[in-house]
Amino acid sequence: MSDRTEDALRDALRNRGEEIRPIPALPGILHRAGRSRSPSRRWAPAVGIGIASVGLVAGAVVVVGGTGGGPSPAPAPPVAGDPVPDDDGVGESRGESVAVEPGSEIPMAIYSSGSDVGAPFGDVFAGEFPITSSGNVGVDAVNALLQHQSARPEVFCNLWSGLRETPQPVTRVTSVTHTDGVVTVDLGRDVTDPFPGADPVCPVGPQLQQLVHTVTSALRTDDPVLVTVNGEPADAVFGEPVDGPVEPDMSVLAGIRPETPQQGAVFSGPVTVTGESDTFEANVVVRAYQDGRQVAQDIGDGGGYGEFAPYELTLRGLEPGEYTLKTFTGNAASGPEAYAEIMYPVYTDITVE
Image (cartoon, rainbow, N blue to C red; front, side, top):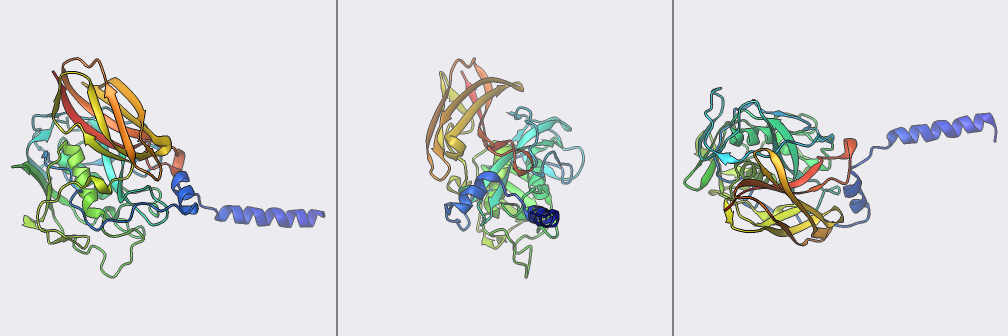
């Protein structure tokens, strides 16, 4: 082969290589193999994270690693406690709360929606990202959702932070309250149709549950979420009609769908954690945290990618006291392809007597 021919072939290969854009490993493999994910569910009341109210200052949240580039492990989750005053005047929270010192770094589950090009099974899924808290985790959660930008928006979607071409939060949060068994998220701008005339790459529909699950997770509650706009009940969220408080819908979740324990559960012996999962190599992990330290862990199996199956994990030897459980799986991908190191995190506050 002549030098000229070799040079031509080398240039051709280089040019083709530069056109290659990797997609997250596992979703891409599943997509190419023709494995379908769960059919998209139109609107289920569960995007909100309940009702454990805690306000967060709009604009005060800094998402660390929110671009999905493999953040370092987050600190231990905060534990429900006394309300923390809102001193910065932006955003408001009333009712039950999770006590967090302003300026502290805390892990937060931010829920995204899957695209049609090979996202994990389920309509919405969570990754754990560390954020700098304003001291009001309810508002922190909504702000984190509004600001979260994925490194792979064509696969991991978040329309709350705008279109890929024009990234900008579609609204702002004015308050988060948790009273009388309802979490109320008040927005400063209507989100019935944030992108009139546009055709987003991401499917429209799961956004309500994104919000509900993100907020209720942060507030450690299973209470329903009422979305209001400037104090008035919202008619719709991203085109999905809303006629009252929306329950978190576990059936739309990808990865891990928890069943027990419930928030605030009390145990007098071993702590059993159950649910259904659909994770890489079927792995499920549960850790117990107390006073910011991991004190126990169990690892087990549920379902592998493509099929939900039950899991049951047990934590033994926990001394009397209050704990936060974190159930999750590690990410099979790493580097720029990774959405987050901790996938599908579920935080549950319990007491051992």
